[in-house]
Image (cartoon, rainbow, N blue to C red; front, side, top):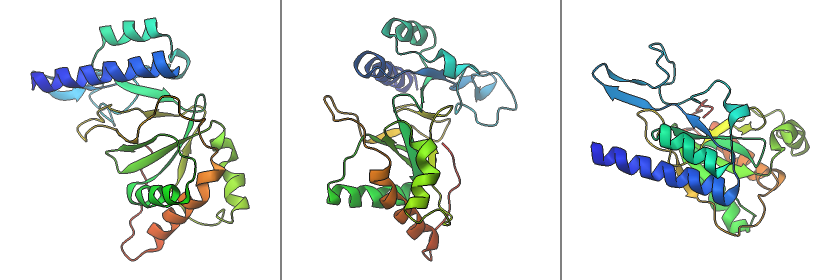
Length: 220
């Protein structure tokens, strides 16, 4: 147990150092699970926490998010178990779809040679494609232009005022967030949402209308 905790801390430290120092991504600390004599509970201290270990630690996370390497080192040295919250709408937006739809879309997009940025998967059954900021504001118009505005799609865009958990953040007791396509040094700019949206909408629609399709209405 102790060895696993140390490995998780080391992985989180490496991630936040990379995000802040190499990529300039602002980060904020998230809550985490605490295991003590009272059992397992959320670090926020609320006995009625609705999402233990799966929310920002600070209600003012958005304004306090920082890309300062010194500030990041200070924060995670004090609270090394904190998960990593990355505000969206600044460096990137994130289009989130169910995992099965996201996997199919990724295969299609790679075969088409479409530009792709980092892609992450959450243990809640979601896949998020990181795209250029501004996608959330454009999403309704883009879906209208593509003829998907009347379709009931399990597709969400995280933009300004929202966030994603960055790998390898543990999400409560469900497991960690993982990279499917990790960020790479010297990568080209993030793709515009319109270059991916048609394929993502199609695979979501196909899942929702297939005989075995199941809608997963999870935001994170």
